[in-house]
Each structure stands twice: as C-alpha cells, then as structure tokens.
Amino acid sequence: MNDKKIPSPPVLPPKIKIKENFCLFHKGEIEGETYTCPKCGTKYCLKCAKKARSEAKLCVKCKQLVMM
Image (cartoon, rainbow, N blue to C red; front, side, top):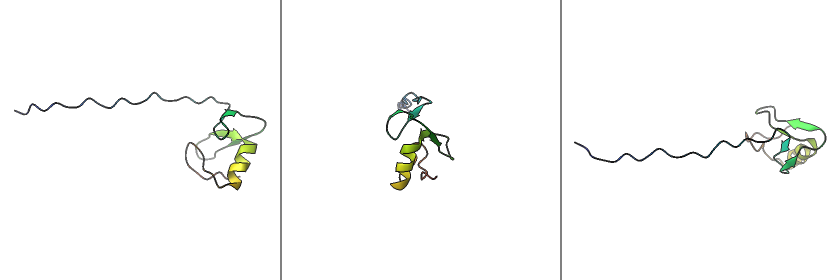
C-alpha cells in the first residue's frame, strides 16, 4: 500500500497570560484611571488610551480602533 510518512502535528507556543494590571501600550503597570476595550475587555491606562485614540491606533489584542 502507501508507505508515506505523516508529518507530526505542529507544536504551538504556550498561551501567554498577561497580567491583569498591565498596559499593552506602554508595556508596564497600569497607572491611574483605566480604559477598557469595549470589544475584548483589555485594560489600558486612560492616558495611553487617549494618546492611542489621537494617533488612531488599534487595540493590541482585538485590533479594534480605540474609541472613547
């Protein structure tokens, strides 16, 4: 019959768990008030979110435009 070798399944990287109090825009602890993405619930510093909004940046996690 057919003696072809089947390749092994790909090895996926482990899921990265992000700290609950971590801002993905400035890559540090959330300082002061927070902004929560309405689509995915990711939290950012309000200051970083305002800056991201003025620069038309997207949510790091779900790629939705930051809206306030």
